[in-house]
Image (cartoon, rainbow, N blue to C red; front, side):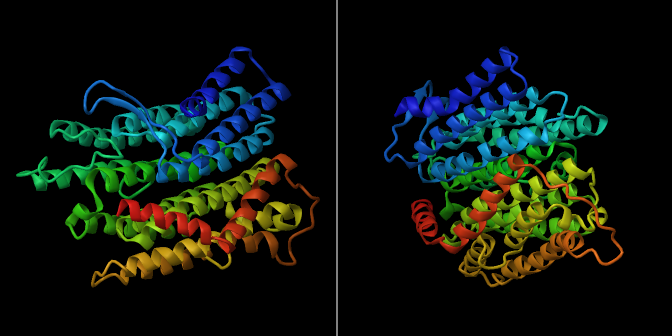
Length: 484
């Protein structure tokens, strides 16, 4: 079982380096990269579903240790990676068919899969931080892929923001080590004795760590990398940046909030109120900026700024239903936003059009692309029976369950954001499918099967998991009860 965990991390890394060394190109590159990623995904799924996975631990001091373990939270992220990563890899084969250097993209994309598996299974803060930084360094080339002036600027901005966030988290690691903590997610909850006499300073450190990991999640005020990086990155990179990489910031917050600081210590404090205010501000601000934006991929990027903070808001309600809603939105937002960015990529790849105002009549020329884009849009707005409705319903329940006198503000902001989401997404759908009589008919330009199959699978999951979400909710309740 230990070898299974190690192979899930090392196999994508080693195999990617091997076929890069062999200089595979064309169809050989596609087959090798997809097979590697698919096997890696299967290994990750096995790590998630096999009960009682053993812990891998190499300890030098109480704080300085390498630890891998699979718990209830790990399983959520491992299964998410197992679904998302192979689908986007298949999509990328067609998207990059005329690219000058697809091998470079697949090299970093595949290695990143192994690093993300390690992040999901990290058992303590030091291990998490090590792979968190590796994730940043390996995803910078995905943003930089086109190597033009805009891509270079966006990659630098992404790197700077990421380093700022990671440095804030590192400050917390130093503090926890200094007070005698070990940073373990299973047993490293900071005790009252360890922070006796410096409670206020400890709370400030916890806030610093939460905001630091919030940078990767696109939380205000350090959200600026998202709308800069997404428009210049290839569509497959944009999809995973929004659908997966931002969720690694969420995972860091889950670990700090519940396994290091402790929900009881944070509940009712200025730290909770501060984070609730920041997340609600981000939700509303991101939706307004998305509505204003005319460039399709940048509009979707601002949407991610808003939607990922739905997850953070649910976590900071510190309620069972808030946690359930947050985890549901981790899953459904990943499925929906990957579908939306892949849909945008299909449009760009086949027509070269990037502006929302240029989308008239494309629905008739690309019916499957627009059908999947519409399903994902319905989900992101929160229309039944899609999963977006289920996650947002539970988020609203979690907000009302806080018992705060202003608990109604959360559901109100969520409702306003849903209306804004409908406005900025349905505009794209309406322009494409109902262009009016003045648009001249043009020949079909539908994307190929490698692009459409992943979008179709994700669209089906958005609906099916929304309709039959009972078992998922029950599992998330069990995880929530173990943390709260």
